[in-house]
Length: 163
Image 1 (cartoon, one colour):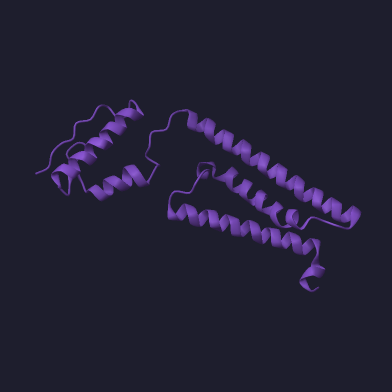
Image 2 (image 1 turned 90 degrees about the vertical axis):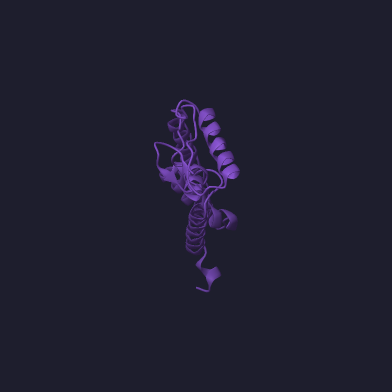
């Protein structure tokens, strides 16, 4: 037997959506049913309900401040790019003028530039990665940045690599 879950206009506030999600979870635990009538008479299996409300955060109602958050993240990304590009420039300048350079700045300067470019393009990916795909993307960006750092290091000191 399927039952309908009452809800209090979840689109009005996050509190209403939270009450709705808790009510559905309690009802599912109590009755042990495999399908629930969430809205409008459409049966939804609990695993789909969980993935829609818990795992995937794209359907969460976002206030108007999310655009401001994206702006802040993009400004942070620009500052990150400028800072690490400045460090890389200073390192190259020091190599040309004094004949020495910082190995750490040569290797990790491009990592900051690549990370900043990633945040500039995908501002919603800021913070701790939640899903496996997010974690793989972060590792890929890190590997790409380290590869760029290795190329930068090679260009600064090809003799170290046996050339």
